[in-house]
Image 1 (cartoon, rainbow, N blue to C red):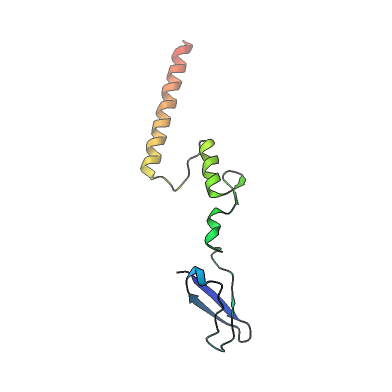
Image 2 (cartoon, rainbow, N blue to C red):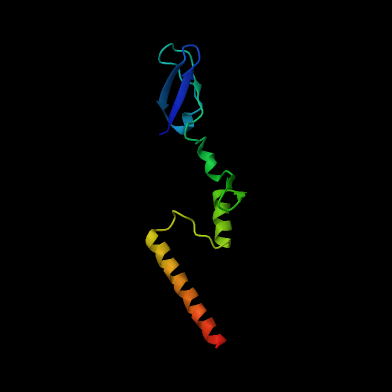
Length: 113
């Protein structure tokens, strides 16, 4: 369950409450004075369960896209998503691509003779 931070304006007391996301909008009474506190914005940038599909600027692609759209654009451009494949797979693919390019260069050089 997520932790939410609250602030009581009259006594300037801050406290954390662990509760379900479904209950995130319910008010919490200050443990010091009992006045309902205000929920503070998250320090971690997570604002809700629906944000997984939010459009954001993707610096690697240079455009605005949802995560799903970004995957599709990256695949169309032949880019490898970092962090989704094991290093062994990345190295094997890189070695295979390098060998194919080397063979193509040798074939091109042989055709020039």
